[in-house]
Image (cartoon, rainbow, N blue to C red):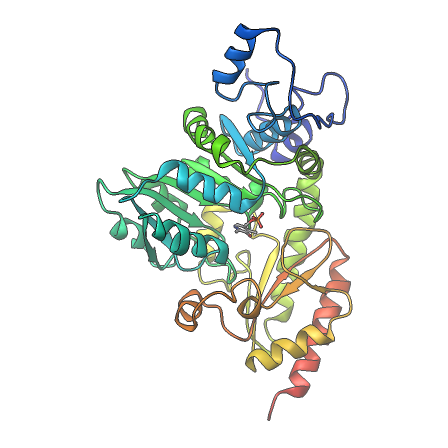
Length: 395
Ligand SMILES: *Cc1c(COP(=O)(O)O)cnc(C)c1O
């Protein structure tokens, strides 16, 4: 009889240890270069794919341990880490696409990804079609046979937590399919298990989880990851071994941190829904989410964010931020501290008014990243701020 696969929380503890020897904590390989034994050995290392112990931009043992751990959590053959989530996105797109190629993505996305596709990629002759992620069949209709090289989807998506149907993305024939799974973390969702080619994360967020590492990572089949490495080693968005060490330390506690945050976020979203200052309280784990059935099909939990739409637009959002005492006004997500941001004026400030409307980035929208504080304290803080907003609303 074969043993059942260990649960994800167990794998988060056991994964990524093959380069440790017998030490429980990974070693920090700060070196940039390694000695070779002579010409033949140096040549072998210089020409191999991802040779260990040659030069740190090619591979680094601490980074490798982090990559192994992510690969294991995503049930992938291999993974490749980058200096940031944007480093992962830029390197992957430029590794796979050339002038004249076509990309399909969607409007509800991290604004940096949109800006990259619409700025540098367009300038280089890589054309992007943006679809509405929530519309069934939208990706399928936008794919141009023979021309679409890449489909890039983000789910749950920034900042309104819309979902993309992973089964639809996986069913597309021809393009390489990439899913930015940052907002789910590998604990809530495994894109590869649906048949998508690559899972991508800004590990700066939940994976590293302590606001002390800037990191990106992709996971998928070894040949595809290796092909992207061959470009990425020239692109140079290489992660620092210190950040990889912090990323791996984050993975050790990922399951318990996210379990707390998933529950606290859902509790918060459901407790705010009926407040007079709230127009919509959005969390994929709540039955009131318009794509709740899809969330149940493809996610183990609804994630650590709440999207909160206030009555009263930007003034209400400003009054809300001014009234918080525990939660902090900051971008980023997935860390120990509850953070609130106003996407229209910060993360998504680069969008034109029309783009903002299409992406659902309204003036009254707030994104709350629920931290590790006691859920009752987070709820009390948010309710106090909402009461202040309600008191300031006309009528
Ligand atoms: C933050 C984020 C990114 C970019 O990651 P960085 O590490 O900041 O470069 C990409 N996608 C999503 C969904 C993100 O939240």
